[in-house]
Length: 118
Image 1 (spheres, rainbow, N blue to C red):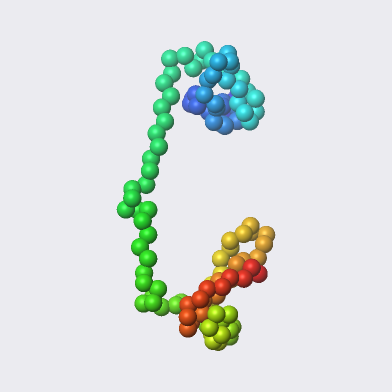
Image 2 (cartoon, rainbow, N blue to C red):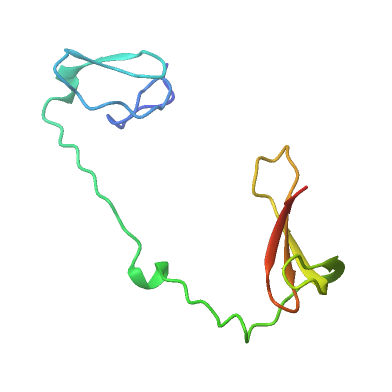
């Protein structure tokens, strides 16, 4: 007995999205190889739509970097550009979870940015 039933767009055995009927006489699920005769799709209309985000939501407003205040802990690290002491840092997980975080350093004098993979 199938637990995925009712929607002809999905496989009744595994729930995978079924490919559109083609020239073959069966529609085969690419995941579990379940077959459905094309005759079962007779008279069905398949519709799809694409929804895009409004432009207002996708635009990002950037603050003027000179007026924004640097946030974070100041550490004793020398800037490789201006050679002054003092940098602010923050970390992000940029690579896979089993690898270390990436540390981003920003000079408090010239705002030069460096990164280090830890």
